[in-house]
Length: 283
Image (cartoon, rainbow, N blue to C red; front, side, top):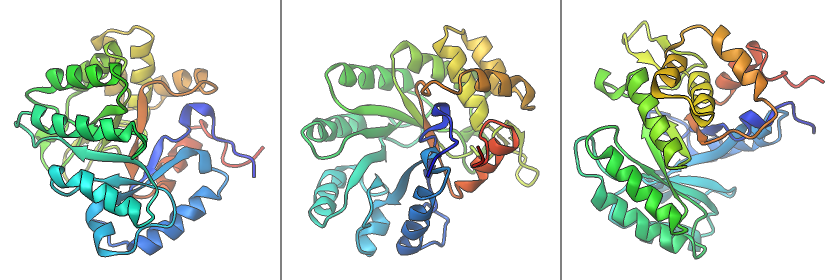
């Protein structure tokens, strides 16, 4: 089956249908993920994100998946080995290195050691979730140093949540994107990316970042844009200033921004189709 997903969007959206507060069971989530993998938009979809706690209570997935380390960090290496021995094919591992306000370095040390084992064949990549708070720049330097040494580790950031302070401002997120650019660090995002463009949730009053905003902002950063220019793209609440830059880069692989998770992967797909950035499965 041919796909109409341009290279810019390949693997952009991970399947987060199993992440809390989802009531979906592993078997149902895996079956639905297989449907996505057989659809015309298959190239848009990344990995099925599977919490380690879920796999511990149910049989391991039959398809390759990404493991979310929602267990104590120190238990992660042994858990991964146990799941691999049980037949789980783990594409990558994502785990938080610290809570907000805590020193991220001890957790990074654990994941660095884990990534060193990963480079020997355990898992292909480790995404270290670093809080957007104290210690962030030092953590990015540590990750960059590890990558320079050949370790398959990269940062992940949470850009939303249940409190207003968990949503970084456009300037704050722009600074993080530029810091990743300066260190040649690919990054993933989690939480809050519900729509293509920046918007305010009428129920909570929280202003969410848009995944298209982040994509265009990253393109600007890679082209040498300063924090103010990158922040301007992140702050856009209308798709007009975002669509043309995205369309202009549609045939090239996406730089740095590795993607994000969505509970329903069809929702971001639908928005990309409505904006004319993906052709809806028709030649």
